[in-house]
Amino acid sequence: MLVLVITTVFVAFVLISLMVFLSIQKQRSDARVIKKRLSEFAREDTAEQSDIPFLIRDDHFSRIPFFNLILERLNVTKKLAQLIRQADVNVKVGELILLIGVFGGLGMLIPLRMGKPLLALGAGILAAVIPVWYLMAKRNNRLKSFIREFPDAIDMMTSALRAGHAFTRSMQLVAEEAPDPVGIEFRRTFEEYNLGLQLRDVLLHMTERVDSIDLKLFVTAILLQKETGGNLTEILEKIGYTIRERFKLIGQLRTYTAQGRMSAWILGTLPIAFVLIISSMSPGYLTPLFESSSGHWLLGIAITLQLVGFIAIRKIVAIKFQ
Image 1: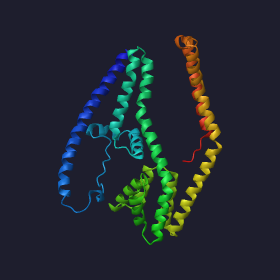
Image 2 (image 1 turned 90 degrees about the horizontal axis):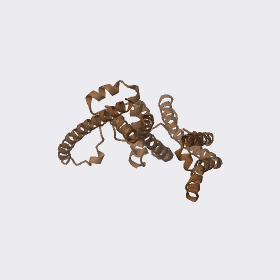
Image 3 (image 1 turned 180 degrees about the horizontal axis):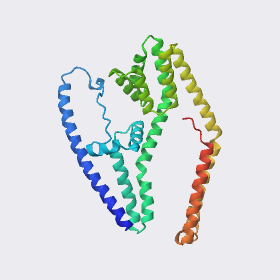
Image 4 (image 1 turned 45 degrees about the vertical axis):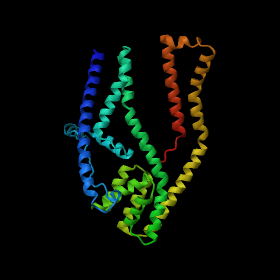
């Protein structure tokens, strides 16, 4: 009975995914036609197309109206939408949810063919989390790149302010000259400001897209300076100095904890290396461990304890600076 239910759910996910894929392809085809027509008008303009900002922002969770109405009422979709924005991936929340369902269904296929429904359920859950893991990894890498380049962007703004430019002009300079992802985020912020939003709102929007303590410190200092006054150039200089000093402290802490992190990797990979060595030297020595039920239990306990020990060591030596 459980196998029938899981199979039915998987088939439903496949059919829904196919319908959504065909709908998206149709919408993209219509979008290409519209873009082609607009490009014909744009040729008559002397301005470069790269200088024209992207003014239309699509905040819908799905391109299908029915799914969009459902997803707007769920709280989890807002968190997924924020994760997508922070990862800077061109995908809708509805597409992500369907992708999670497809991965989950594919993960259940092999255990179902083996006649193990409980294992199929666990494998499906693990496979369904893969797209979310990918977005989280992409978000973390993007955040690290932003943090690494952000002090140089502050120095660029400080130089522009010292030369007599306004704060918005210095923000535009960073948008044009800074490398990505700093340049992209400041470009979006500057375009929102040009469209008529308040400076406070556009800066807060940037902190929602980039979850960085350094950026929040920067935005807080700017907003306080706008309300209370003060020398903005000196404020930005001190923020840049504080961020760089924090980088130095983090580097020293990582140096001091390098031995502990290396110990975690060695202790985590050592049992696997011993299994491979013993299996190559004596192929039948570990056969009862993999074929008997008691051996399976021992393997499960050993793997669980290894993971717990690895995670515990990583937690002890981890440096939480965000």
